[in-house]
Length: 136
Image 1 (tube, rainbow, N blue to C red):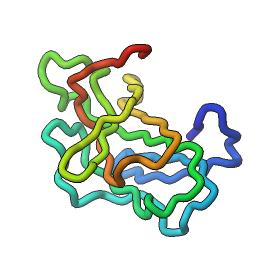
Image 2: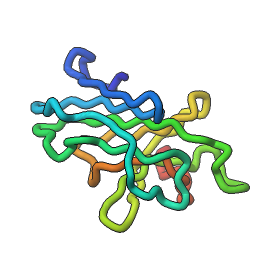
Image 3: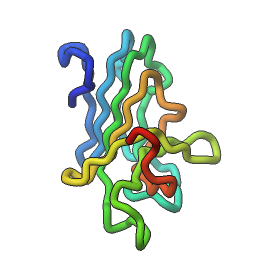
Image 4: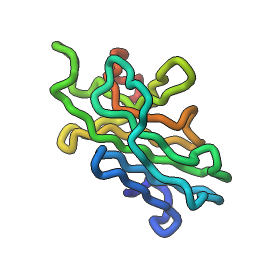
């Protein structure tokens, strides 16, 4: 999985195919334990897929880029919702924060690219009622 602006040889890639989750990252230290697994966290009410845990995410060091791509079920969108009203959501304590995300309608995936570790280690594709942001 490509991260724009980075040489593919510097990108570590991880996948949990059964959940349609992919993570690519460029970091100075990636622990051997890092990976993806199905989460036992309760997903938000507006989730469009099952949540996934980024295992040992807090152990990543010298992060330059993280790309999270998640498959989602477009039929789970509420009636009248735009098919682009989807975002990667991250569990942060008692809430789920939406990350700036892009939607691939053909692949039914949503992707967020960060320049730091996500604000939590559990992620899910979720309905984003705020719709596209300025500049999208």
